[in-house]
Image (cartoon, rainbow, N blue to C red; front, side):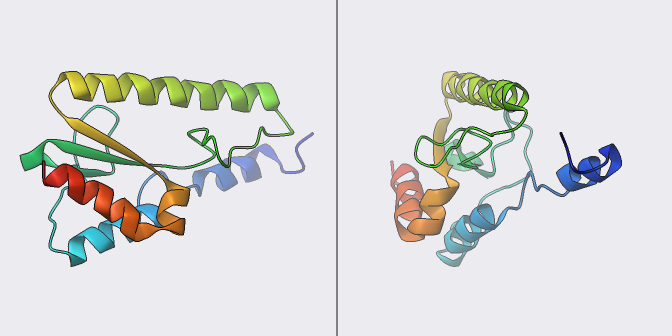
Length: 133
C-alpha cells in the first residue's frame, strides 16, 4: 500500500528528471571543455542525450534503474509487476531505437550513469574514440 496520496505520488514522480541529469551534465561538460561541440535538442528516434550530427553519433546516458543496469538494478519490492513491465518496455524500446539508428547510418553509444559517476575520463575516451573513426 502506498503511503502517499495519489496527488502526492504524481508530484513525486513529476520531479524525476528525464533529461539534464547529473551524469548527463557531467559528460556534456567534460566533452565541451575539451572542445567538442554537440547538440542536445534533436528529433532522432529515442531522443539521444548528446548528438554529433556531423559524425552521425548518438550518445545515450542510461539510468541504472530505468534501463535495467546489469550491475546495479534491483527489482522493486512493491508493485513489482508494474515496475518490471515498465522497465522491460524501456529496455525493448532501447534495443529498437538503437537498431533503427544504426540502420540509418548512425553510430550509437550507450553509457550507464554509474560509469560516468565512477570513471568519467573513460566515458569521455569512449566518445572520443567514436569521433576519431
